[in-house]
Length: 124
Length: 112
Image (cartoon, rainbow over all chains, first blue to last red; front, top):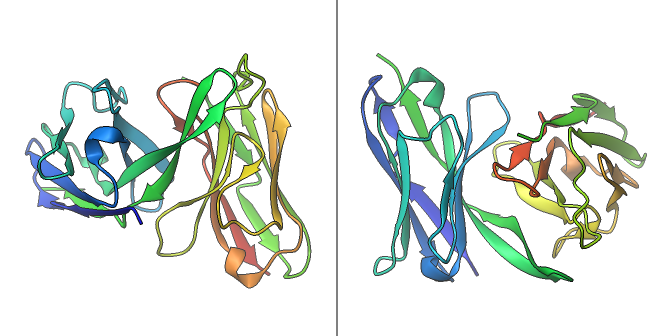
């Protein structure tokens, strides 16, 4: 069974930095497509970033240049380094694994396992 | 970015009755392989989202058969054939055709 456990959230002042961690079990992070998805208080879901098994990385425009996704294969852990934090970055951050299913032209990936999330509050 | 629009945003339901949620995308989600790159998720109160439907109409593992997805191109529907009390929560559609993945605003389903 795949399990994802996030940590590292907390309260931080605007302009500050935080590093979120996602401990992965039941699968290796290096072989997985791993995402960060966030949810501001009382709001909907917003995709933040993805790292593919091959190492390709993508970010939402709202965090590009400020957030960095990475993984530590020896610790089987996913990270999100968040710099220059703003009030609008306040949210619960979910670590999400994608699973795959075959389609005629290759493989389709969808998000199937979500962690419980870690809350980030950016406030002075 | 692909804009996803759900309706209604709030849906009162009666247990045992059917329910339906609409999701529209600003661009076609129909891939050249014939599949629609559209998924549905349910976020129950106090929980993380869980996948219900992938590729527009494929039920994820363990999802009851009262849930079904349909549609193609830019118009999609999630149907619950007979609502149960445990189905309350916020339903989201999300497109996976383009990066960034984009979600609908969510539809809150509540028992009347």
